[in-house]
Image 1 (cartoon, each protein chain N blue to C red):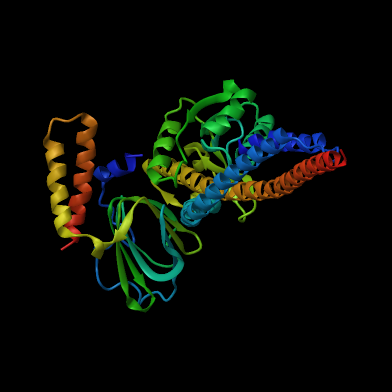
Image 2: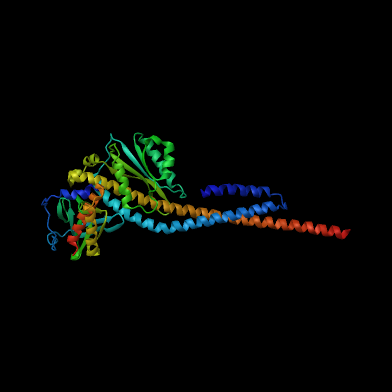
Length: 297
Length: 165
């Protein structure tokens, strides 16, 4: 939003430079204009700087939560790796897009939407559940008929397990039996980069038909609970990691915005000074010319 | 998601191979190997692939002790006490609110729980107070859901009360 607001200012700025190109063209209005623009850019810089600081403070906490949730999710998924669980071929897949409501964080949401579109292109029979307004806005343009459920107001702060449970509950109430629920989320690679990644939670049938499940002793009743629990665990992991990515991306975006604003301030300051100098010189020339002219008389 | 909490009621006393009442002495003398324990909560990792001698878990099918080379199995946990016998003989006790324990084929034990705290962190007074409140709701005239929730709460609290002295 800011970058968009700043961009016209850039264009207007360069126009101002072009307009003032003829030397010594003293113009009070331009001077005032430049001053106004300079002020507004300074204000924008203040805002982006503050947002960066806020994001930095939240990042540490978000990253810690992400590490814990990752350990939790990995522990929960070990069993499916050991059992070599795979989704059933002939059944539908449900994609859950773990995005959030707020923007100003670089390509976090559009990256997710793009990944979802790619996956949907290979799997046209799938359905989508969306967490967060941003991905909803982007995907409802692309495939509105596939969207079954959307949740807003999630991933605002560090997600809690209760959030994940509530969403998992809603998903398990959906009428269709999906052989696998694929959660698309941004996985945190490092402070600079993230990547849209897929996390899978399987249906009961897929679990019972896994290659290596016979190695385990399991109660049939426990299986349904295991499936729901694993879905909630994976959702929680995806949400926590997505949240950390978002905060880190926001920090970076705001840092860049502040840097750009700083550059613009420098440019405008120089332009402003030059402009002022030119006006003063022009005025001096006028006075001196006037004085010499009257002295000659 | 409440289903596994309800599963407590389906508790069967299945004397499994290693089923044993809570006891001080483990099987450590018999088996020298370690079992790699991962005990994780959504917000905290208590153990991460740490070698321990024995873990006693409150499975829905009965209390069981897990040693190295245990038969791979997937067990639903009811709210209860998890006892961990660490290397060197120290014992740690955690109260978990239910979850899943999976014994992996390569002597790994993964326990996922929604909530869990060391047993010594619970206060007996607070438990008593909360039991009182839960009983009030359970016997009151709230909605069916409220009563069911209060009953679950009561079960958990009573289990907890029996453990915290």
